[in-house]
Figure (cartoon, rainbow, N blue to C red):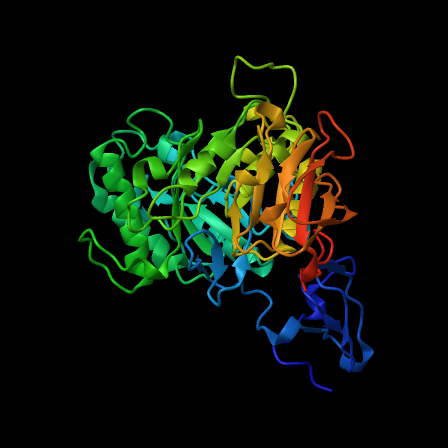
Length: 534
């Protein structure tokens, strides 16, 4: 019996006996037999197949095509979310590893395991996007990678240093990481440079044609990759280092144009481009800033990014709500906030404790419920890709590979599953569901609902009681649930008459006792929150 359409083969000689395959979706395995297994990330240990020596058939769910190729993304028709090229909802669950391209290795070394461990771990946890800088900082952003290769000829960004052979220059490792991410069905939110590290005398600042040439190189080399999302900017928090000067704005525009022109098969720096073939955004400076403050009207900017910055006291929901109210609408979300395991970057806050999983969850649920298209998580050990024996910068205190299974990383997957368990593209923020004061600080209540009244969700970060307007839900009866962001478990409360107001008290209260109330139109017969949608 031949494998089903879309099956691929793995040659056994290339595998060790202990190799684990990380595969997402409903699978079929075996010699002449194809039996379904549960959907979702699964770990498989390959074994010898006597009937088909040297081969293992892996069928794909619904014959969707090659397992290693994620579909392209675009902005949804309602301008609030990202969707695949066929219109399927896409939840951005990002992870931050700014130095991954420059500091990772393909094989195990004396100070770190292979970067494939990182990709497989993140894919298995349900992450969908990796945020990283292609050419990292400091030293003008041109530091050599883990193999000692510099990215440019004499730091000339219009002349990438290329050498014959598959593993002989900086860009060969970038190629490998791009392919490895795709193999794990992970999208790459790739920054061409870290804008704040670009000095005022840098050639790209003095002459935007240099930026265009660098962008054109990137677009020609990687622009056809379906899983590439282009992120311009890069933490330009210093005055004069952001797009707040004509030369810096010209640099960013030239990078964007170079990328787009290369993707479209053009090479003409004239200040215009066809932006339909690229997906682009901008990473802003920290401190509750959004790309919308400077660039909302730019034709290349498909969606906005927010950076709240790592601190204990934050209200990222305010920035998301502000972006959500802009016209014309563009999707938005918080792409950098509250790194788990980090010290606060606000010196007035205590320096004897670190960001906890509870802080991480508050940031994520506030972001998404306020209207974010998704959320980006981060751990302080990943921001600088800390390797064994290195100085622990930015408050990092353990190597990156020892932080892979931090509690917050597991718990981010619960949020994704919660959102995906209900109608996705009709979700809107709506604080009017909450009767009275939505509270502030760590107790702030944040609500979201379906635009047609199929469901509503209210996040209580500290387990505070609240009243809900039941009439926001369609139907004669409402089914209520408590969803636990710490465990991903949901417990049914029962069904209640509609309309009216009803008070709800979460099962527990205090720090680290956050809960989500889920209200469903009982007639819709939704499965438990967090369960796969029908």
